[in-house]
Length: 339
Image (cartoon, rainbow, N blue to C red; front, side, top):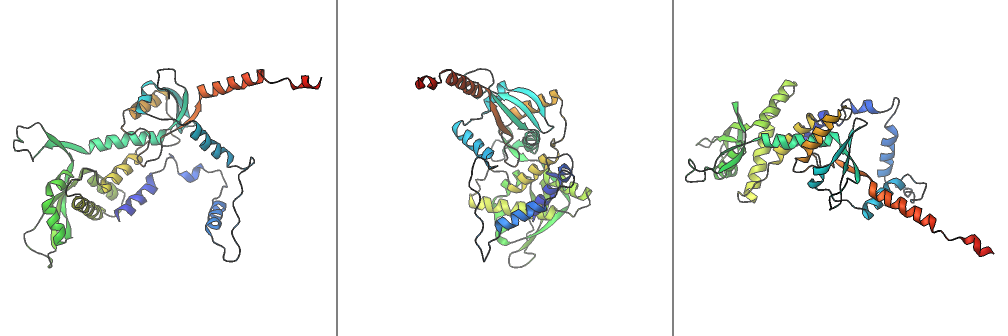
């Protein structure tokens, strides 16, 4: 249920456009034709066989896409973080992208490849990694016997107190797992009070969730401010169920941020990111690319989509033009054969 809620939230805020995407369409434009084509393409006619798709020819509008795939196969580019060390920012394009020049060659040289960086995807990635860092704090390793004098610290999710506590009914097996992996849940920012007696029969008990990760509490407060229903219970149930299953399957060796938390951070990163249509000054473009260069995964947004695309290889174009000129100069003079 929390997944559906976050997806619904994403429909409201996870748009690359500053304004409503519907307003980006031309006046009078309609999506009815597209919807009809989609319906017909998926429909299996019980009487007549479906019309075969057109064979690719030089007049087909598929030619450009095919040419891009062929070019990418013949001239692949390997993007590395080292490319950002000598990147040259040209400027913003159409209030959507940032044009840059990068060097794809191993040897130090002038940048040769023109790329377009998606300003929304880039800022979303910057925000996600910063939000992930801010979501954690460090505390002494309690597993160390000399923890008071030890310099070893473990990263734990920042936690917030829940007033009043969230009430949940858990099975006997869930209670057993919570007791076994309580330190692991504590590092995820989850605090649980377990009663001593069986309150529901058949081993089921009512438990109180007293602490939750700060990012979940912020989301709950955000929903209430917008006049929406509380999502605390569904988020808590999803988080605890997901983490208990994972800890049981891995015998407590899990070191992965829970999917529920990841989705919350992704949504928050997208919500405050620069949108398509936002005009950026030259210094703002340089600052954003500089921040992106410090990210661990600078080539994809929070949702995994690519943040840049190659457009033109200057050196490759120059070599092709030179080759064309040389070929023209060496063209055989066939007219002499007529003599």
